[in-house]
Length: 470
Length: 118
Image (cartoon, rainbow over all chains, first blue to last red; front, top):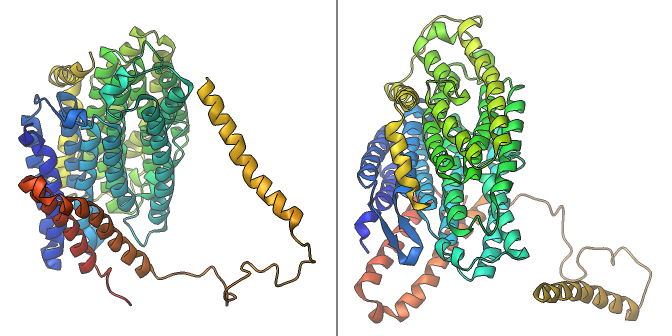
C-alpha cells in the first residue's frame, strides 16, 4: 500500500486542524489571516487532488479506495469549499470572534465528504457522513442571536439523526444478509430476500434524506432559509453531491441490477422530486427559499440519471453535480452579497440590482438560466446527458416529466431576473463586494459558461471516473 | 421463510411476556384505594421540591463531552498498551497522532472556557 496516495485526505485533515489551532493562537486582530490561510491551503489541496486524478489503489481490503471516481468528487468538494469560503468572506465577518472556527468546520465537513465519496465500505461511508453532518449541524446554527438559525440547527440535528439511524438500520440488514460491509463483497453474496429488500429500501430512504428527494425533503426549506447563506450554499451543492457519490457507488457496485431492480424505485422518487420541487418553487417570495426548492428539483434531475444506471445517465450525474457547484454557488454568492448589503433575501431586495451592479445581476441571471437548462449554458449539457440516459434505459416518461418541469422552472428563475432588471430600484449606488467574492463570482460565471460551450474536457473526466462501474 | 417465522414467534413471545408479568402482578397484589401518596411519581427516596422541569447548567454537558472524548480514547489505549511490544513503532506513531488529535480538541475546549465553572 502506498500511503502517499492518501495525500489529499491527510492534507485536508491537517489544514482543518491547522486553521483551528491558528484561531486559538492568534490574537483577536490577527484572525483575519485565518480565512486567507484556509483559502490558500484549500487551493493547494485542490491542486494536489487534481494532479492525483488518475491514481488507483485499494486500501485495507476494499475499505477505502483511491480511484478516478473518488478523485472527481474530491475535486468537486474542494472547489465547492473554496468557492464558498471566497464568497462568504464578508458574511463571515459578522461572526466576529467565531469566524476562524467557521473555516475549520467548513474544511472538516469537506474531509467528511471526501471520505464518503472514496469509501468502499458501508461503515466508512457512515463515518464520513457523520463527520460531514455534525460539522453542518454546528454551521447551520452559527448565528447564535438569530432565532431562525438556531431553530434550523436544532431541526437539522433531530431530522439528520433520524435519517442517519434509518440509513444505519438499512446497512445493518444488508450486513446481516451478506456477512460483509465491503461494497464489492456484498455483490458476491447478494440474494433476493425480504430482509435484503427491506435493507435496500431503508438505505434508499436514508440517502434520499441527504440528497433531499421528495418525500424526504421536508427539512430543506426551513434549514436552507435559517442557515447562514454561505452555509446554505455549501449544504445545497456539496453535501448533496456527497450523498450522490456514496449512493451511486453503493448501489452500482453492491446491488446487481439484474437480480433486484432498484432503479424503478429511484425513477419514481426522481419523478416526484422533480414535480414537487418545481411546483412549490413557483410560489416562493424569498430567494433563499426559492433556491431551496430549486435545489430539491435539481436533486430530482440528478436522481433520474442514477435511476437510468447506464453510461449516459451516470456521466450525467457526475457532469451535473460538477456544473451545479458553479451555477448554484454563483446564485448563492449573489444572494449573499445582496443579504450583506440590504439585510434581506426577499425577492424585493433584488429590485433594481442591474442598475446598482450590472455584473452581479448578470452572474445571477446566467447561473439561473443554467439551472433552468437553457443552451448554450452548462445546465443544458448536463440535462441532455441525464435525460438521454433515462430514455436509453426505457424511462421515456421520466425524461418527459423532466423536460416539462424544466420549462416550468424557467418561470420562477426569471421572476428573480425580472426583479433585478425591471424592478423599481430604491437606490442607485453601486454595491461594494470584496475582491475574493468578485473572484468567486467570476469563477462561477466561467464554469457555467465554459462547461456549456466546451463540455469535452469535463465529459472526458466523467467518462474516466465512471469506468469503475462498467 | 421458516427463519422469518422464528423471528415472528420470538416477536409475539416478547410482546406476551411483559403483558403476562403485569397481569400476574395485578392478579396477586392487594388492591387498596388510591391515595395522594400512592400517586406520587416516586414511592421511595426524597419527595421532589419545586418543579422538575428546570434548566441545567450547560457546563455539565460540556464537561461530560470532554470527558467522553478521553473515555473513548482510553478504550483504544488499553489494548494498544497491552500489546505494545508486538505492535511496534508503526502503532506507536498512529497512537501519537490519535492522542494529539484528542489534545487539540481538549485545547480548544479549554481555551473556549468549557472547563470553567461559573
